Image 1 (cartoon, rainbow, N blue to C red):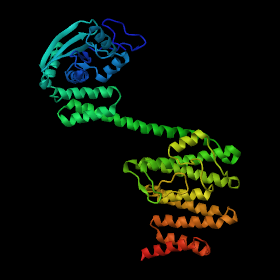
Image 2 (cartoon, helix red, strand yellow):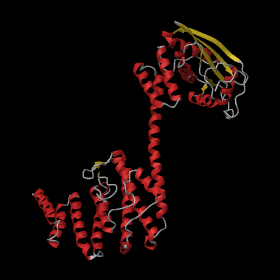
Image 3 (cartoon, rainbow, N blue to C red):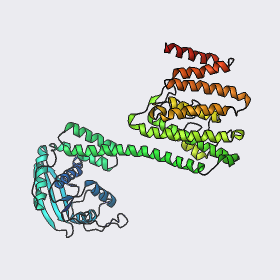
Image 4 (cartoon, helix red, strand yellow):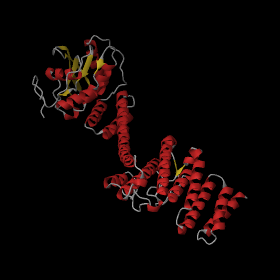
Length: 472
């Protein structure tokens, strides 16, 4: 869209911002016009304006409109940024940003000289308060720019102080700086940061470039954090849906699909917490626990406790409906897909074995040793374990195994031996991990005494021998 001619009205649909409140000594610095006929000078329009903003902002008694705010207005007005020198345009923009004065400028060059034509306009009346020009050589650009700032400071009745920033001595450096600003305005923060990084390396005394570089890096990392937050928002949405499916429902009173849905979402809830833990710890090998980063300890511990509470509820609910535990829990397709995308595994709403003892064993193993149920859809292995971070979970975890052993008596006769052996075997592993080898051996020995013909006999006996050998 072409820039409006001087004095022309702006299209009402393009921008409907109300005029801002005007401060007594507020100034906006418009981008300079490039009248050189040489496109290589284009980046100087923004680079020079930004340097002017910084210089004027350091003057006592002046309030200077930030360049980012000016860019918003120029962008919304859809100006070409090539005709900001005229009074009408300066007034329009000045009113919208709440400035009393507007600085406009134009660049003209006849090598090796460079000339800057400048004006200070009172926004309310359009009166030109200052009209001047400064001429210098491109190789001493800092001196030229310093003289330019002094013109406006004196025109505003202020005292010229020391430069507020270390100088950019080369014109080429300022041109590169302007290119970086343009890249940032176009939304390419990554490329802009790269350009500014190169400028800072080449001209380490160019403080303004360092400032803009820091701001861009902060913006990039903030964007990265926002993406991470976006993922967290997806998790929160899924958790909210899960909670809605579980709240105020008693699975003992549910039947058919309603009961399958309930348990599908209960299982998904546990998998969600495991996925969160796995993502932070980057746990990949279920046999080799990954360390929890120190800065993430509290957050991961919170997820571990939430996982504990969920699995305890699941085990009790399954025990209460032992005679009709659903074989195939389910959930809405979109929730299953969302869970898969969040890393909850291929079957986020299911467990391979739906029994209270299986759930309790997996929970006790994770809480006491940091190692997961290998058959679960998500199985992070971490250190330290929940019990290591909160010793109260040592007794809680062992109590879960005692509860599982007691509960096995309610199983069908054919399942009792298998479930008891598995639970005692794990009990020994957990006690050994807790540094209680004698108690571990006692649990394993019970397997050998009570089930001498079990297929697990040899493996359990080997554990006993190895543990006793280490105790000598």
